Image 1 (cartoon, rainbow, N blue to C red):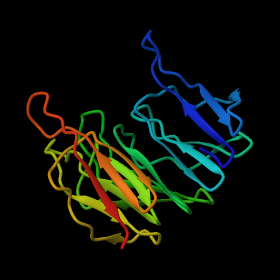
Image 2: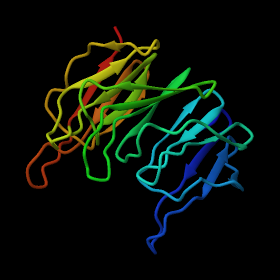
Image 3: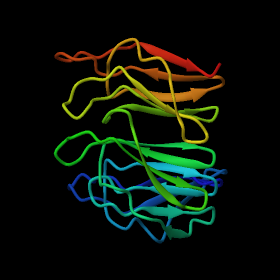
Image 4: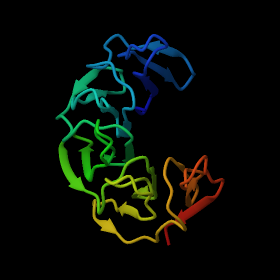
Length: 212
């Protein structure tokens, strides 16, 4: 999202083709088809917001980054450090982090690509390779919880970063899981559901984190 629009990008059609299409909705729910689409058709990509910019990576389809401003004008930014899927764009006010993810060989990554409100790019690292995790932001903190590591083991650990991008210590999840959903509301970040191992073994448990 920008400050004025929510954007939906890319995806894979019923015929197997990858789309470059960008569709925007404004505050009155008016739909606009953005003339300048993504650089490449893609799926399993990630998006995030920083100030007036919506930023999209291209999944496994390249390292290019597409940026749209409040007027839906397209800009460019430095490429991400590696192409990957199964990651998230976690937005925290003055920057957005594209965290972890997996390569085409399904190997989880430690890479964090950060873009600030000037579209300046930097690269950081997670404490452990992480893909298919839950990602959200709360009161100045970016949180990446659970997922799978580079050996496809389920993770219980949580990486969290404050507004200065410094890693902070937080409690682990109650048990390891991947493919969860996460969101923040009020004073809490909620992490719900996910895969906990075994055949068709999913959970309905929701865990909450709060800033104290």
